[in-house]
Amino acid sequence: MLNGNDEQALQEVNSPQFVLGPPDGPADNAFAHRPPGKEKPEAEARSRQERPAGEPQSPELPAETDEQPAPPSASSGESGKSFRRRHPIAVVIGSVLFALAAGTGCIYWSYTWHFQSTDDAFIAARQIALAPKVSGYVSQVPVTDNQHVAAGGVIARIDDRDYRIALAQASAQVAAAQASIQNIDAQVTVQRAQINASQAQVEQAQATLVFAQQQSDRYQELAQRGAGTVQNAQQYSSQLLQQQAALKSAQAALSVAQRQIESLKAQRSSAEASLAQAVAQRDQAQLNLSYTIVTAAQAGRVVNLTASPGEFAPAGTNLTMFVPDEIWVTANFKETQLASMRPGQPASMHIDAYPKRAIRGHVASVQPGSGTAFSLLPAENATGNYVKVIQRVPVKIVIDNPPTDVALGPGMSVVPSVRINAEPSLYERLTSSIDHLWRHS
Image (cartoon, rainbow, N blue to C red):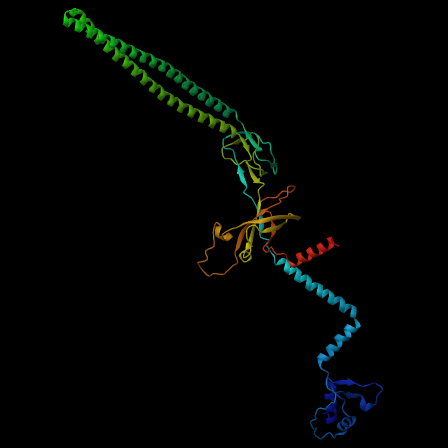
């Protein structure tokens, strides 16, 4: 069993405030108790050691200390001042770097606030499939894959012998129709001469009829007075009737000749229609002959060429894909980026395939609706639970200076940046001022 002094000594050894004394000190000072303030008097320690074992220990009050712990703010301030005194150059350099970083951040924010950018952008074009309009065997393919072709350039040729024969036949039909019209025109000329002759016969018959009428009247009067014979009166009366019949016959012949002109005119109209039909057939044959040469309607590049000489190509068979030179960029901006975006605003673009190329362009139009609204299966937001998602709206950006020494095609990734604020930024004003000072210095 431990007595009271031993228990007190054991508690002091186990306490966190126990500190070993010097090894060469007195035996009664082998253990020392150092409270966090001022050390307790030595008399108090001796009285505690000399207290009898059976005497109960009285609770000890904490020792009052005259010294108070210094406030942490004062100590940190003193350490900061001491650091500035010890490292004045480092403090100045740090302050300058912080000021530069803050100024650079403000300039960068002021510059980027004038632009809207997206990485959801691709080159687009109206690529088409080139196919022959007539069937036949492919005789020649003067192009190869990825070759650039000017407008009107030949892509493929089809054997045209059948179409040349058809054109010659149609041309012969045109010549026959033209000859038929010329024959009818000649008949009309002859008939007009016949009409003139019939007209002359009518005039002659009219003159003869007038003379016969006069003779008949004269001999009728002589016969009534007895100066002439009845036979002469009857003879001239008969001649009058004959001349009247002759006049009617001449008039009928004139009418027939005139009607023949109308018939010839109708025949000529029919011949003209036949000529027009023959001309149309000839033009169709000529078109079919021209269709044997497959050409490019505009400048562009041949892509995925499948035509080969010697193969039979039915009408409408895909010979190759064709990508025109007219390309643009379809940038899918978020709908929250379109508040200040308008057609005509300048844009700069960087193509992933050619990152060192700076390409300029401008906004051509903004699609009136999101991309999903015109998809094959548009989203139906009126069914089920609705979760709002920021939509993307396609914006067409036309390239102002497309590069000619590299190949650009649909689907290539682009990162466009549209300037939505025309006012100069802080960075631009600073660079302009520096440039102005540099030029006038």
